[in-house]
Amino acid sequence: MQVLGIPVENGRRALCWKLLLNYLPPSRLAWDEALDGQRCAYRRFVREMVVRPGGAAGGSAAARVDVTEHDHPLSDQPNSQWQTFFKDNDVLGQIDKDVRRLCPDISFFQQPTEFPCQEVVCGDYHERLHERVQRVYLDSASVCRVGLGMQTKVDAKRRQQEHDYVALPGGQEAHWEVVERILFIYAKLNPGQSYVQGMNEIVGPIYYTFASNPDARWREHAEADTFGVFTNLMSEIRDFFIKTLDDSHSGINFRLRLLMERLHHHDPHLAVRLKVQQLYPQYFAFRWMTLLLSQEFTLPDVIRIWDSLFADEKRFDFLTEVCCAMMIQVREQLMSGDFAHNMKLLQNYPPLEIRTVLAKAEWLLSR
Image (cartoon, rainbow, N blue to C red; front, top):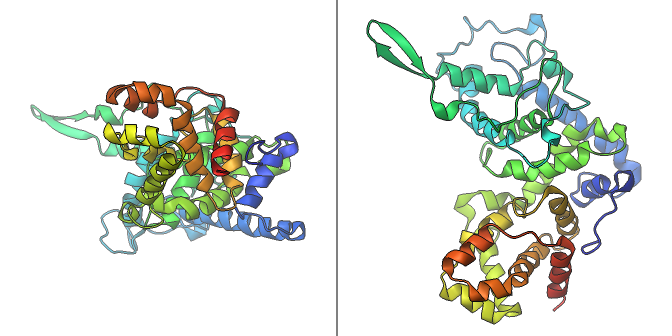
């Protein structure tokens, strides 16, 4: 599987990823129960966390909160729904910016999903997250005094960029909106870690794979299944995103040191060349390993790489060999180039046949 990959026919890749990342139990007899439990839990998260301030999670008029008496935007109580709402906005703003630029080389994430979340697009007490971001940006626009009047000046940084994805009309949801909701709920459930820029690059290929399943019965639950698989994957690589753990055995600096040790084992001359140039792995391989190479290759190639990474019994040791193979594949250019040339080469890795890179990694692993 590491070299040949997972067959894409009949949704086998999506199914294998669910199994390899422990979203589904090994026994097929237990699948229905496991899926029902995971999907029901996610629907509950949506009801409880993607809710308008002043509206209760129950979503009925009878459950509406009287914000003037019990809770209000100026409340300083630690359990205030409004205080939580305001604290979430900074995180949501970063998520919104990142998902609007997800995989710009393809149009998939700009297209409408077949299965929008009805509670969000049609409900009165749950909100579309991008609308909250737009409202917050407008409300927080800078205001300056002009003569006797007031003039609003919107920060240019907050204006939607021309290349950002746009929201779809009411009743529809674009795929990027679904990804935004997944990341927001993940951040809410993991306050110690919250959202870190780059997580969008991890969840994107998973959602794309599940939402492209040829079987509509699986596509219908792509959002909940993506959340479950993404959560399991993050539990294995989350230490890469926590700065205080960088130097721990599970942190990113340990993995980078291991990478250079493996490169020295495979090609000591190349390793010495990079060391002499002071071209440290933090300059290029930090992104490679943290984001599982999701920004170095096209989406189809990333998905193919992930087939191999998820199939790794030692979990991501193969990633180290893939990174070594990437450097060895451009060895001649690295040996002849100066610091600036080599830095640019490794930070903007050239297009290569991915099967060649993976075959080289497999050969290195066997040495």
